[in-house]
Amino acid sequence: MKIKVLGCSGAEFPGHRPPSFLLDSKILFDTGSLTDTLDIKSQLRIKHIFISHPHLDHILGIPFLVENLIFRMKGHRVNILSIPPVIKTIKRSLLDGSIWPDFTVIPNTHAGILNLIALKPGHSIKIGDYTITPYPVHHSIPATGFLVEDKIKRRFFYTGDTGPSDATWGKIGEKQIHCLLIEASFPNRMEDIAIRTGHLTPRLLKKELLKIKPYPERIFVIHIKPQYFKTIKTELQKLKIKGLRLLKDGEIIEI
Ligand SMILES: [Zn+2]
Ligand SMILES: [Zn+2]
Image 1 (cartoon, protein in one colour):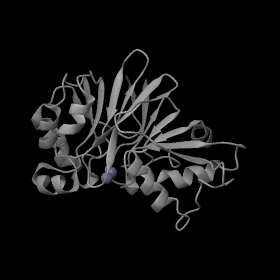
Image 2 (cartoon, helix red, strand yellow):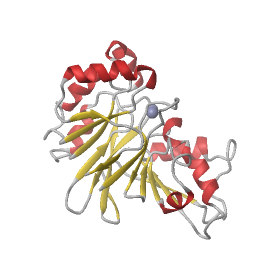
Image 3 (tube, protein in one colour):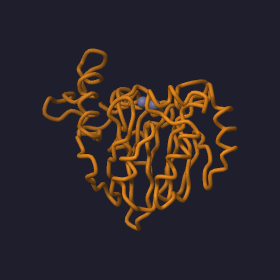
Image 4 (cartoon, protein in one colour):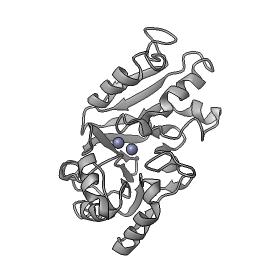
């Protein structure tokens, strides 16, 4: 598996792009950086978009993507997949026709370019060689991470935005995660606000990792708020966590 990091930051900021991860050119996880980073040919290859939760930094590429693609290829469809409350909010707040056209009914009411698919938490969906399973995380609104497994049982888990959560790791069970993309949005001194808003700090991240059995092979930190980038980096370095490093926009991860 090859993941291209279109963006991995906790905000849109000069030199930092919001989260979006492209798996093997075809499957996208969140859409914070999309139409500004991929050319049209690459945008056309995307048929499945998994959304962790409907906060703007994770969904903002959807309207621009469909507008770019709708008249390119007749019958082109893009699936948007997530747990039911996420799908419901996307339909109600992003695609209700008030701030952007409702692309679930364009070009045809029975076959819109966007197809919304609700996934049952903990239940897998097969897409090509991948088995993808949503495992809800703990955020300020309903949100989910995704476990992705290929046919030789290599796995990565993308948390999206999450605060401390016992349930997520318990539900995944004892599966070796070869690559963990996990957030750390705030510095240690802001632990209180991190917990209230469903995010992690470096210290909380370290505690979270101890809940994961077996311990993940590689850990990439994402969703850092750019204003606190230097502090969070230093705090993470001091914790000396095995296998951990910060991810950068534009990087490619091989799993
Ligand atoms: Zn969020
Ligand atoms: Zn976010």
